[in-house]
Length: 351
Image (cartoon, rainbow, N blue to C red; front, side, top):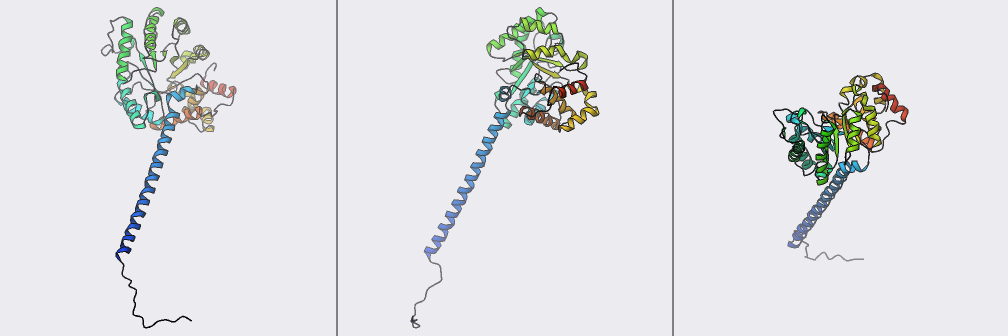
């Protein structure tokens, strides 16, 4: 049995001592420090994840990556956008466009606006210059506003080209141009070749990476240029419509010689066909609009790099989405028969 000393006068105080106060505050400080450490770790982990994710996004959607896949792509066209050019270019790049087309032709293009637009988008998205593809044009004098020509129209053709390229480099805020296009053939093949030789010199200097020509619907003119050129055209940019028979022969030549066929006026010139119930039904079956179904069709042909000049953010996103689906390997047309079905609805004589 245990005896309890009831006479003891010892009492145990319940008042906190100085030591218990210190222990309490030490515990709170350690807890706060641990919480700060955990919060910092989570924050840094999330930032790193975002950085890696952003890096992968930029790498995966860069122009250089898209080109390395050797698959068709869409180009954002900037004609007739005037003072809104910079805004539309920034919105297009934000939506996912990486290929931008312009011209040193103040009559129809705001080339400096393209420069401001891509610089603003690059700063916002963390893009480098090589993540984008900038294409511009030397426009012969007949295509210029005579009151606003970016070069001396009385100067020799070689000097006109040199000045035009210098203006483009300044306007686009870059030290090189991905693609330089002759806006239209000259009056004679001899003059065309004079201009082309001048353009070739910029490739030799590293200021231009590739050359092309636009508004060239004559098979003989294009093939003559191709045969005589030291640096072959890698771009043919034309209207894609019935009046030119959809450039059937030119496109065959382009495909055989790995020339990008850049169609413009693609949707506008074919709006009647795209508005038919048959095309709408085919598009809906693929989860597309008739317009994006048209782009899917052209991309699937393998040699098209169509232009889209939309000013709608919704349409920009839709266009980029179909391009990304195509580049990711989605098959929109299972066989040649399905391709021919669409070509017949458009009225094309051949693929």
